Image (cartoon, rainbow, N blue to C red; front, side):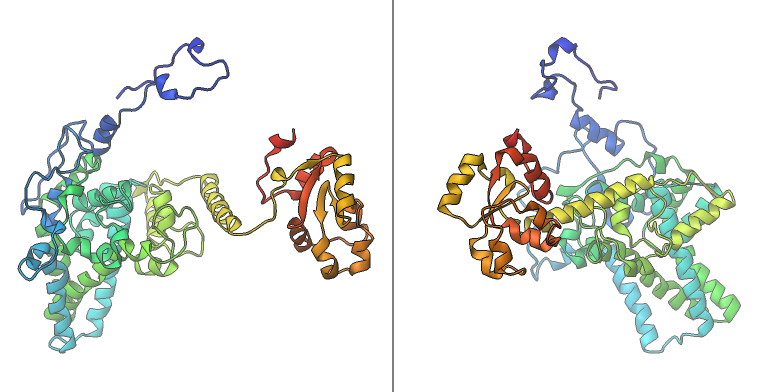
Length: 494
């Protein structure tokens, strides 16, 4: 891809300064090369492999043809991929990702059954520790996996990164490398078939179905994660993820509850298994609920939404419409009353020198998004309403035209250069028939705008349906009187 644009001599540009085909005058970006850059395949990258294989089954979804990363997998086989086949009694088990079935469904079911049958009693001390450890693991995902590594919204010293890597693994959501790569693909291909947790496929799929079902390799995709591979903590955690995950998710809470409260089994079940299940479901809500409930104050082209309830569940990640518009901002919530403990943690660690380079978008840029979306919604509402004849589309009369039409219909009234036919409104006039009849055939602008009554905006809207023409010598007054929300084409009157 060329690093500079080739500019042609000014003599090659049309005299009007415009070109109907700028692509003939300037170099265009090569989309194939740009996609190669976006995947990081334009440079040599460190190969970081998990010693236990591809956890979460993502390898077939991210391995691309280096010659063309934009191409989908060619189905050269006669048999369709299992994800494209209907479910039957004979193949239902082939649709499932059994590793994730065990991790996300079967193991939690065991934990909940032990609780529901009271086989392992839940003691208060264990419950309190489980809640605390839930918070530690959850905020390590949001502040570490998500905002630090996936979006590079700030920088962190190695001790903080080490803590996030260890306790983030306690949530059993994959390694930083796997999690960050999937999330970058999600942002790159939001609401498309290549989005790993495409919200358009339904609430269940975006919440957990994408993990439990075999993905279609036709929609494989990649994003550049060279910066993740360059981080020694990310590399170490990925290579030894299984061991780190087992230690942080199950061994640590078991030992802590055993040593402090004498309840090893309770620590394993409640601070381990059930805690992992709860934090997984909370995190999955970012992929599901944050794309289904709430408002879209910044943009509605895609599914992400802002919702305070989702924010409560996800350590502040519920302001998802903001996040998708401003992904490198270390904040999700920008108002003081919005719940975002992750933002507070990141800012607090920066005070101690553990975090730095906290990125934010300018308030002006944020306000631009808010105003643009409000205008967009207003335009939609505006299009649903009948505003009367557009002034620009009315016939233009001179005085002779007006007098000639007045002879045929004497129920004409001029207001601000616009001729109105009030025939059907004389008996409905709130000020009475005599007042309106006294204005017939005359210019009632001064009387309408305060000389007799200072008419309301509603009166002006009612009057709009009675427009039949514009006076030639009062074009400017007519345009100004009509104003917004009508679309005025001034060129017709000039």
